Length: 141
Image (tube, rainbow, N blue to C red; front, side, top):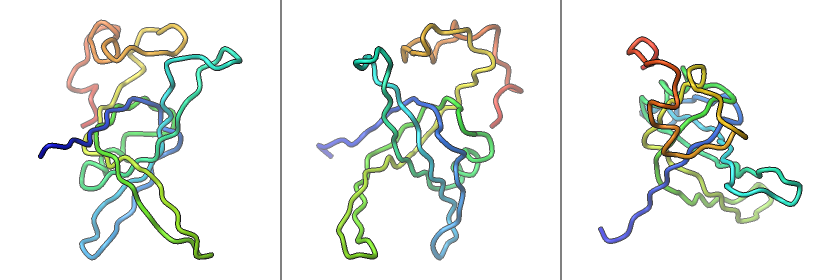
């Protein structure tokens, strides 16, 4: 394939993930929104955020729902999907969602204080950001 549709995001969950089962096969699906900070300040000197709708299918979505709650910092990897639909009033609408393939739980209780709540992606995923070592028992899955 010559084209690529790949999204990698890190942000905070805006709400608790919602798990439901859909279709004939009763497949687990989770919907959630993450807030991703922009890397520049607005006119008021604050960081704005983009609110990204996400959808996660399969067994991993059940695990995601079990351990993730509103406010948690999470890394996700997936692809963009454009969903088109018609409203009850007959209006054509569309929404872009991230179809999540993988997620990374980023435990904050071990993280050192990071200035201004901004993150460098290289820092967040390295061991020097954490106070002490992370053992297998610290990871919920």
